[in-house]
Image 1 (cartoon, helix red, strand yellow):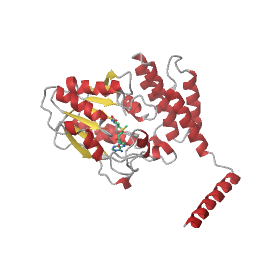
Image 2: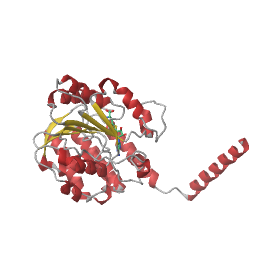
Image 3: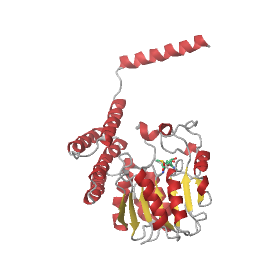
Length: 331
Ligand SMILES: C[S@@+](CC[C@H](N)C(=O)[O-])C[C@H]1O[C@@H](n2cnc3c(N)ncnc32)[C@H](O)[C@@H]1O
């Protein structure tokens, strides 16, 4: 699910930024595309690599994954065996654990409710490292909610070393994952931006001073209780960071994430207003693929919520009864 530039970037990180000191941690490897790049880079670094790449995922197949890989899996099945097969060449380097990050449910939104981890999924919660191991590179592509990212950082902040550790945020520039730029903006005084992958959504930061678990604990536990105006301003600041780097496309994509943030807050009218503002200032040279995706998302969310008139409801109920009746006849 990552771009060719991101694959090269992960290889480069493993080969030249990992010094052999500290581990490399990957959250959310899916079928191993990113894992193989990190591992191949580490193997080329010349350092001792045995079990130095720690990988965590809940390995639960979700419906949206089928469009990306046609495997014979049903939603809810484990895809771990496919992952293991794909990373076989580097298995000596990799320590794999089936762990989950907690996600806050967004019941009123289709996209989130079909992807998020539920307690009923019965995978143990991610618990970090207890052996004092420090982390040189933390590649995050599996923290798919505000709650999940806050929990991950709270669990790992004690293993991150100021001046050394990298936080590599794959979702920073993606319109559906507002929690990443919000979190990095809130932690701006502890981090310095170091890399921006132009052909992808990844932005990386180096830790400059220790983040305490108490600081993260003080943040809201759910997007539903985040202050709307302040959070929109944080997204403006995240967008400005990329604009200052000359990345106009990344900068507008971060602005687009305001729409999914507001939809998750159940504020669809403000989401539409923000969308119109962003659309009006869309750079003339920039690809409109993401803008159009967000338009379609907003359209679906808006019309799904408007209650259907009673006659339409009746018609669909009658149709259902008709279908069931047919099934009875067939039986
Ligand atoms: C976008 S995919 C990662 C793509 C991958 N890095 C690649 O290169 O193709 C996100 C991954 O995060 C995992 N994930 C999502 N939510 C999670 C959660 N709450 N706990 C643990 N893993 C999660 C998914 O199972 C999936 O493997």
